[in-house]
Image 1 (cartoon, rainbow, N blue to C red):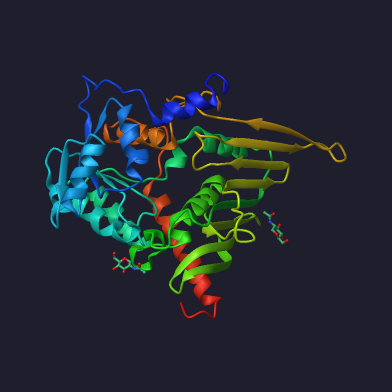
Image 2 (cartoon, helix red, strand yellow; image 1 turned 180 degrees about the vertical axis):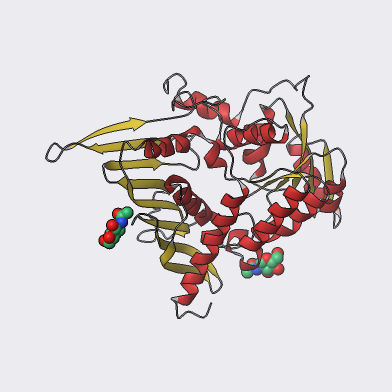
Length: 386
Ligand SMILES: *[C@@H]1O[C@H](CO)[C@@H](O)[C@H](O)[C@H]1NC(C)=O
Ligand SMILES: *[C@@H]1O[C@H](CO)[C@@H](O)[C@H](O)[C@H]1NC(C)=O
């Protein structure tokens, strides 16, 4: 089945999805975007185009002309700008859902305000700066009976779900070690990028490490027992460019993560290959996924199964763009991005239907907790005056 739609068709359709007709029997949800964010076109604006029950209705930016230009470029009917723009967006009675892709350090404040205004929230990851803030946001969402989702989009794609299903099936035996990595070569993010700004909630562990940690927790179906070690390479004195960390998992298993916002060029000129993978070593074999973050473009799932002693091993490769290909149940097309799968689940949830999967409150709180624990471990094991 994976050959039914080839690489070019899949990628071209993903970036230029067929427009859907607005649903006649279910009123489309109107989304408002907080900030003229660079991520919003991939994460929301394109996915909405092919969803019959969702529209992007408004955007707000601190700078009114920026908001207007962004709205025009993306065909968004309404723009709010200026110092009160964000709050005006939240107060717009037409809007059902707020998408919050603001810098991490502003997630908590504006998600609380959006929930107070009675809006559902699709919140970019990491959820906030601390587990405590995350808990407070979910408390308020529950109190107001609103949907709040931390946008761990990769979890909604069948590729990572297939990896977990293979592990859970027991075919490879108990987990011994999980290793995850997310790193891009230097130059991908400029030095002034918000990802390198401590007061805005930047840092490699916050920005990319949140995925690697989430992936360890998801694939192991458990929480770590402890952080064994953690180490930063700093960008500036208060923000990490790279973090490596190891964890103890239940049943004597271990895990490690590596995240890097800019791996230095070798010999000053040769960029490293981006690393975006997870490898799970089990008693009876190994499963490896390359590119769990953007699997629609390309990914591979390699499964190596040990045979009886002295008989070697067998290998197979799977590519799973739809639930059907992964022998699972769920809607979707091979060209759907992780964000499109996520939107499907989000709309289902708001409309009172059962989503294919979900990232729940406890999951988001725990992920933030372990990010905090890793930072704490670095501080306690370092002589650097951070
Ligand atoms: C971080 O962002 C804040 C708020 O935008 C800004 O005032 C500060 O100068 C930034 N810091 C760095 C190091 O860029
Ligand atoms: C974990 O390791 C300890 C010490 O080697 C051993 O006694 C225990 O049985 C192991 N537990 C599991 C679940 O393998």
